[in-house]
Length: 395
Image (cartoon, rainbow, N blue to C red; front, side, top):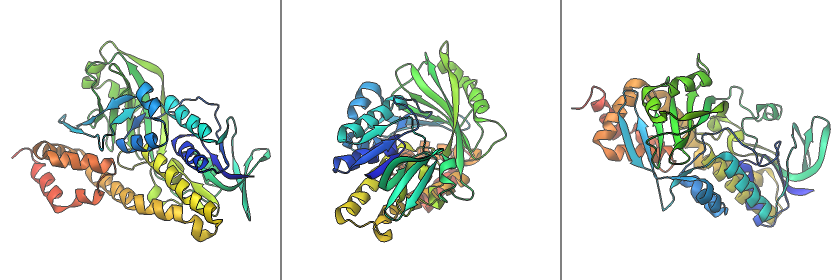
């Protein structure tokens, strides 16, 4: 019998396991893969994610394996480029391959006292009065926990039978490759709305001075696959110029992202959902690592209180959901509205012209994407007036 069983050793699951093990709880961390393992992702870390990682003791991995980014560049559909810094409170962003990030986090969990077992596929959860049991295809796996936290990403096959998936989940779809030999990379991440269909964007996240994670993301279903969109993006003239004689490393990989936290269930009885399993991928930016890490820490704090008091009632366990909703419910609802309203060519170009004229607007948008400012501000009269003034070009 473990205090907590965490299923999924990605950022959210390992953050939770680390936090609880440091508090002296008996934690079992499971994953379907054998570690170290790679994970298809954009590999970008926001300053907020970096802050949490440093608190978990994973800063060595960032400094040794990651590439520091201090700013962001956004290119509008018509090719206007806006740049602004992203660092906050002394924390820059980083780009780090998931094989390195996740292994560093798993090691932190094990170092804190959690037990890790890989190559375990949980396909079912059996709930009893005072315990929860993970099961595989052949029945119970032999481990019991007072609480089970599922950090299983977009694993709808496990979540749907548990009644923890919305009737119509929202997905974004992405594809990424690694490109070596790039020219003109700087310590900034690049988002491009030119060369890809809307609503969506292409990205270049530098891993070194000449290597980057290059990808494309589409919100909702499209007529073309993300693989096709990424190939089109790589043929886009500005990208071709940066690639030069560089090499696209195969294989190109695609993956879904769940963006529906604001309408998803995130717990039931002694089951908690962490990170993308709770739909915690930003519906405007597609970023999910920061949310996974923070949900893991919030779950850890809430569960520690439950164990300290010996109280696993519905009221006690629901504090995790209350805290997570207070932190992100409004953010996700408004970010969804922002995407639907602003992610069209005329408005993105107008927004770009407005940002060029009023740099504080560019900083506001970045702060909203990084969850540092309330998304409602983008619907305020001052912002709307600036965008409307810019729709027909500079005045």
